[in-house]
Amino acid sequence: MNAPKRIAVMFGGKSAEHQISLISARNIVANLPRETYEPILIAIDAEQGSFWTAESYTDLVKPGPQGAATLDLNKAQRLIIRPGADQPFCLDTSDRTPLHLDAVFPILHGPMGEDGSMQGLLRILGLPFVGPDLAASAIGMDKALMKRILEHSGIANAPWRFVRSHEIDTLDVDDVVAALGLPLFIKPANMGSSIGIRRVEQAPDLPAALRNAARYDTRIIIESAIQGREIECAVMGNQNLKASPIGEIKPLENGWYSWDAKYFHTAQAELLIPADLDATTAARVQQTALQCYAALGLEGLSRVDMFLTTTGEIYVNEVNTLPGFTPISMYPKLWEHAGLMIEDLLDQLIQLAFDRHAQRGLLIDKPDMAE
Image 1 (spheres, rainbow, N blue to C red):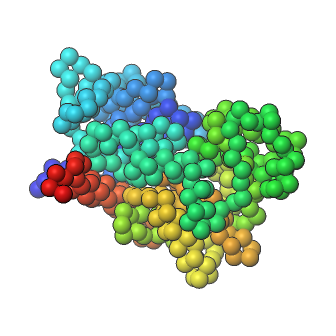
Image 2 (cartoon, rainbow, N blue to C red):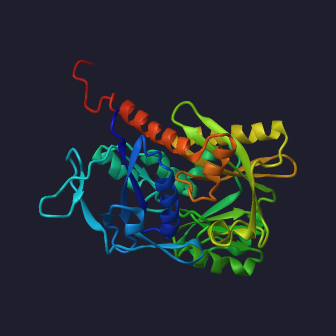
Image 3 (tube, one colour):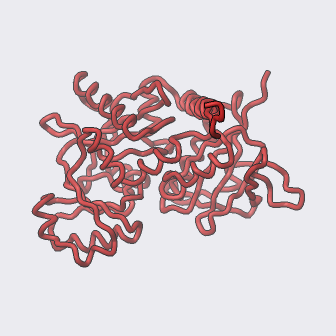
């Protein structure tokens, strides 16, 4: 019998979504099929971005109130990286003991984890990894780039304006409102989990919302608010793509799905799986999700978030290239409704990582002098 593959579950990171990554990692570690895979824990601290490992999840993460969690490095060992080595991660000790890894599951949310940064590092280190590659991760994270590609591909998304942080004080608010109407959503271009987002009901509130978004990113999106149902579809695959059943989010409080409602006060929103859609509409939503996934060059997995209006129009809101894997997260829940339990889902995602890595190994990376 073959030994289990050693899969680094990489979590934490320096983004504002650090804490959600800790919760996602706990669920992945708990459900990774042990007969096939051995989880190896790699945590990234929020202060320095240093890499750490320990024997167990509880040796690295301390639980907090209301399901929150924080890194606790008292029992951890620091890791260093040696590019070019067969096993590039090793203990920061005198003998530099290597950490044997077969692949990486980077459940890192937000900037410096989901935006192509970590994907680029793992490409350099030659390690297979779960999720989209470098370019697709960067595009999926940057809402301005994503929206331009969707527009070029004929995929509907909310009308929008792009603003840089240094342009806020000179922005013509009346011009923006005339073009996009009210209400508006203000979003950091490179952030997820609804962090930094504000809904603007009145024009005088727009500059403050922009300055709030500028705390998280120098690139800011101003979007028209689409009046419609919030629906989501999980997509999986490299070449042969699969779309899950459709889920729906019904915010019960402020009319939109906030950071607080997603993770800590879940009674503020109702998650419906499956969404109450007729078969034709559900198929249209799945097709839109697949078209979006392909247009952005996504691989492995992503969740596509959309709006469905009362007149049947479908607008792509955003994609999540490394969606949450907490016990209440929509991505694993959608596949569970399709009959794919989380253990099998994790197995398939890791196999997709190995498949892509093997295919990349067949590519020529030097000039062919015979041509």
